[in-house]
Length: 257
Ligand SMILES: Cc1cc2nc3c(=O)[nH]c(=O)nc-3n(C[C@H](O)[C@H](O)[C@H](O)COP(=O)(O)O)c2cc1C
Image (cartoon, rainbow, N blue to C red):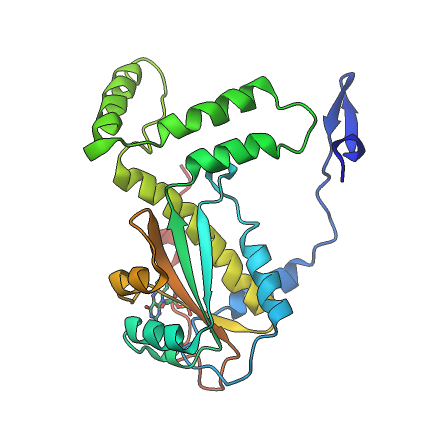
């Protein structure tokens, strides 16, 4: 859709972008996708059609992401040699051994600069609002920790002083904070991915029980790419879910304040 064809609505004399919320979503089916998602540790040999896999990955990448910067990558491990190595790196867990597909989900901390520029190039409206332009011009400075976190601590000190008088962003500044920043959004995409598989009739197991150093080596990832989890996917066997789902009482978690 070219920018001149974007749907708009008149709000107080101004034309605004218009994206109405669809009202015809079947919440019971949505709930069924969520409640029937279980961590499945045994899969049949049924392959996942490429179109299903692609659709699930596309839905994964529609997850919300901090500043829209899409810090994720998904490695669908296909080569027999790499798959065998990955299963081993996953400590030969059942969920890895029997999965039809193994997907390594990776968080990247080093594309903030590149993607900020891309965001401004691909902005979907004719004019990039000045505030948006400023935001994406500034973001790369925000997320650069500098050698041995030197810039990060300078920023922390400056914002800490500013924070005495007004609310300020408290991060991500240090390398660890920038990693957590990238991992957060990537984990959201992972959740989209497993729900998408469920909606297509397939199942998954998220795994962080793997040797990250071996996985990074196998995929030739540098230190700016963090393997967040391996997702095994396939069709569940009749005994693929090992026990009923356990969730503690909601009063432990939900607080109205
Ligand atoms: C980040 C993360 C890492 C996990 N790692 C593993 C794993 O290495 N092996 C495994 O069998 N299950 C793993 N799981 C699955 C959890 O054990 C499972 O989600 C939990 O027991 C709740 O069960 P449910 O997913 O069926 O609701 C992981 C789940 C998450 C979210």
